Length: 107
Image (tube, rainbow, N blue to C red; front, side):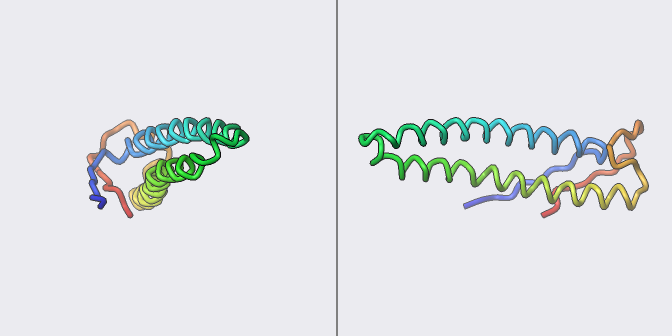
């Protein structure tokens, strides 16, 4: 079971928050990539073959939350771009003033 949690940040901080989420996802993907490489090497040894399906399933389980994070980032960015266009603020988030506008995660 999953629970959706959302929070608000100043509009100008959205790119930074999304960037942090993407960096975290990249780190997880790098670790999983190494695990998959090691698994590919291990299945050439007959004794490791029996554990391979379980290990592949474990990797797939770890990919699911990463995919969810990427989907959420995509939705947040779509909402951010729309909000910025509507407010005529710069899309790059470098507005010096904190205009107090906030955007919730859109999904």
